[in-house]
Each structure stands twice: as C-alpha cells, then as structure tokens.
Image 1 (tube, protein in one colour):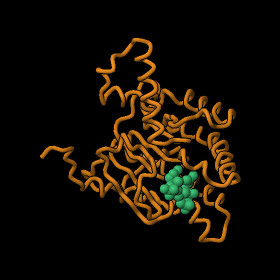
Image 2 (image 1 turned 135 degrees about the vertical axis):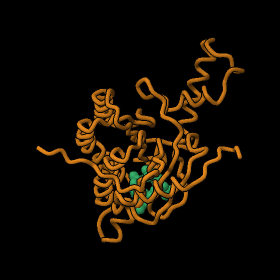
Image 3 (image 1 turned 180 degrees about the vertical axis):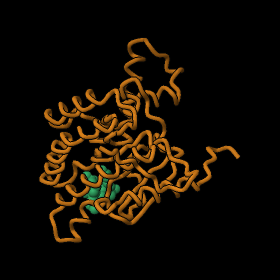
Image 4 (image 1 turned 60 degrees about the vertical axis):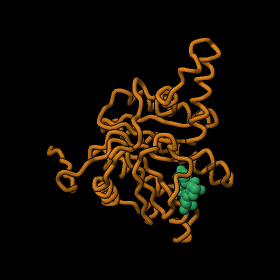
Length: 249
Ligand code: IPE
Ligand code: IPE
Ligand code: MG
C-alpha cells in the first residue's frame, strides 16, 4: 500500500516554532451563530483539535500545547462543564489514535479536581505514549498560569522546609523547573514561541503566563471550530517574519 506522504505548503525557509500554544476559543459563539447548544460547539472544536494537532506534527512542530479548560472555566453553568468533561473522557479514548502517529501526549494543570475516571485515562494515555518522539502534545485541563506558578512556589517551599533548599538559591530556572510544563517524563517543555488565539479575543486568559514572557502572538477572528490547517500555516508564516530580539539588539 502506498504511504501517503505529507507535503507542506509552507514557503522554503519558513522558521517553524519549536513550541506553539493554542487557545482553542470560540466554540460557544460558533454554536450560537447556528442556533445550536454550546456543547455542539465544543464537539466541533474537539474535531478541529484532532485535525490541527496532526497538522502541527506534520509541519515539524515539536511541542504543541492546547488550552482545553481553564481554572476559571468552572464558573460556567454546571451542565456546560459536565458536557465538556464528558467530551474529554470520550476524546481521551480517541487521543489514543495519536499514539499511532508517534505523538507523546501529556497533561498540564491541576488534575486533583477532575473526575477519577478522567484522571485514570489521562495517566494511562501518558504512560502508553511516553516513548513517542515526533511531537509532544500538552493538553491543558484545569490549567491556569497563576495556579501553575503557585504550584511551583509550593514545591520549592516544601524543599526549603525539608532543609533541601536555601531560599537564596531560588532563581528563575528553579521556579521554571517546578512548573507543570517541567513535569513531563524526563523532559521540560521549552518556553512557548508562538501563541495562537482564534475567536477575535486578544488576551491570554491565564494561559502560560510564565512561559510566554518572550512569545510571539497571532490573533485571528476565525472561531476555533472553523480553524483550518491553512490557518495554522498562516500563523507560522507570520511568526517566521517576526524579528525576535530577546532584549538584545
Ligand atoms: C472555548 O470556547 C472552549 C472552552 C473554554 C472550554 P468557548 O466556550 O469559550 O467559546 P466562546 O468564547 O464562548 O465562543
Ligand atoms: C480561554 O478561553 C480558555 C480556553 C480556551 C480553554 P475563555 O473563553 O475561557 O476565556 P475568556 O473568558 O474569554 O477570557
Ligand atoms: Mg471563550
């Protein structure tokens, strides 16, 4: 059987970001525009997630972090939160398909508040994909950038309390190395290079606030369920044209 080879339509010489963060926003408005319940928007958004994740891998992205549920999203009506959690459970079974594509799947965020069945599935997907190397997919569930920094600070405080760490030795690297993005099996995700937010909103909404210190941003009005592989390519091309200086000249 002929193997379908991926052909990138990116111009020669395009710089591919090592780490892309995707704020998957606009599901509710997508549904509203069609007179459908918000949860249908989330279902469509989940399809887009699969397509775009595969495309990111094919383009050579090494780390792809998707914002699926924030620490603030619990403020939504209970039935919407329930519908989102049901979708996660269903899609975690399907995320297994990624394993066949050599994609390592990890989760970031505070899991302790999630359903035990969901936590179990998350653990088993991580375990089963830990040796895959084409791309690392980080799924942010019950994730908040501030919560992540608090989590890191608490871990450091515990080390101080145990007499293992001198407060004078706390530096940016140590704080960084205790974030959720540092809790991948034998790996620490690098800072995010490009953050993409569809839906027209131009804010981070508590996404990777530490790791985004020098990120580039790309905003588009397209709603997440309508986001296409070509839109990801447009974002990457825009990124490739930016001049990153990191404070130097
Ligand atoms: C993003 O879509 C999905 C989650 C936050 C879970 P929204 O549900 O925020 O969609 P809008 O912003 O209301 O359109
Ligand atoms: C950010 O979107 C969270 C996710 C996409 C998971 P929100 O829709 O929750 O953000 P706000 O409320 O518009 O800032
Ligand atoms: Mg939203």
